[in-house]
Image 1 (cartoon, rainbow, N blue to C red):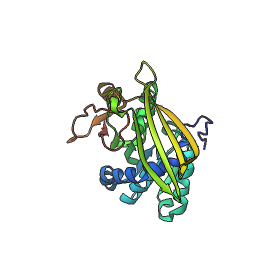
Image 2 (cartoon, one colour):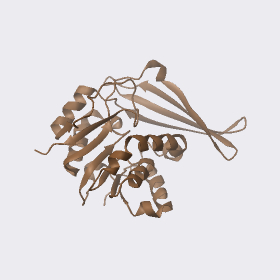
Image 3 (cartoon, rainbow, N blue to C red):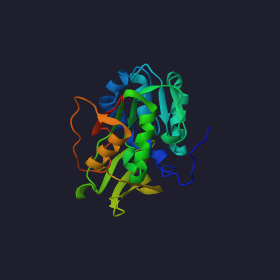
Image 4 (cartoon, one colour):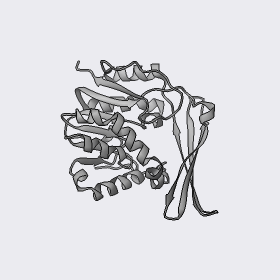
Length: 259
């Protein structure tokens, strides 16, 4: 199988710190927002952007079906594989695909696909291909759970903030987040500045940046419709919210049409 191992992997620095700053929050939100849908899967679950495996573990624990974890970033996948190696029960339920979903060759049916905290990092011209790939891998009537569209820029007050510090041994790990406009198409540049402090002394600093395109509601709905998706009955219409990336807090539910 081919792999994605680009030296330009934007997560090559962030992967080391990802679980420290996001693990507990993302796990809690995944349990609250994804576990019930996972429990209802009868065939299999496709997780696009498995990252370090935080949500992968929740999906696997909540379901009785295989989980197909797609993660092209070698850095993030390394942490995912370490998680699998430590949990024998999880290894038996998860198959890892080291490529983008458009190139992942699934040999088993899936009736649930999750694509959370991913779509905003896909360039607008590449999104239709993502939706088509998801539709091709879901059985008719299968459900897609994806980030709901948001406005094209974050609120001014959200442009700079700090994540809660984490203590590791006698060192303090900190992360500052900065979001700046980076293009006429609404593109945003997200920068995470990590620091490790020992008492009053900074012993290490690292920086990681990536781009995001917050989703426009009408454009996203049209793209999904063209790919063969319809809003799931009983779910609220997707409304714009303020912010670029809001994992798990604003989700939209679509079904692959049967026609």
